Length: 141
Image 1 (spheres, helix red, strand yellow):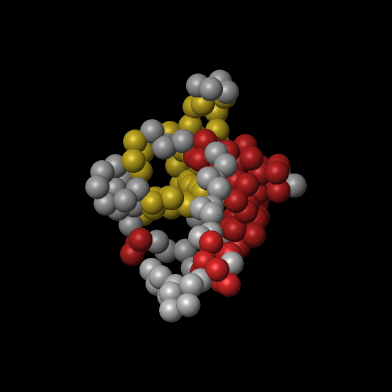
Image 2 (cartoon, one colour):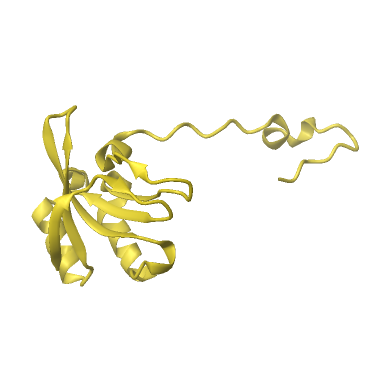
């Protein structure tokens, strides 16, 4: 099901990407070959693409399942779930470019290896509702 091979450079505005970095699948206990075999057996189409990492001086190999507008994404919920179960957040990236401009120089592996920021602290009224003053209400966002 490999359609073509080329370099991933940018993500057009109003588009989404779903890609697995095959360099990172060993974190899920599988090899890149096993990952490709499982995706192919599941009948999920993908393109093999690459990105050069100046930082690591190596190629990152990507299985790109789509770069498409939201309404043009052809994968089913079951196929998305299959990919999530196979790759998890260790090697699967789903990202949208937004509607303002193209997302240039998107580096899939860098996104995957950047830890998410910590969640904001809960306000005191959420953590300790007993601290609410009589007659005070909880703000609704």
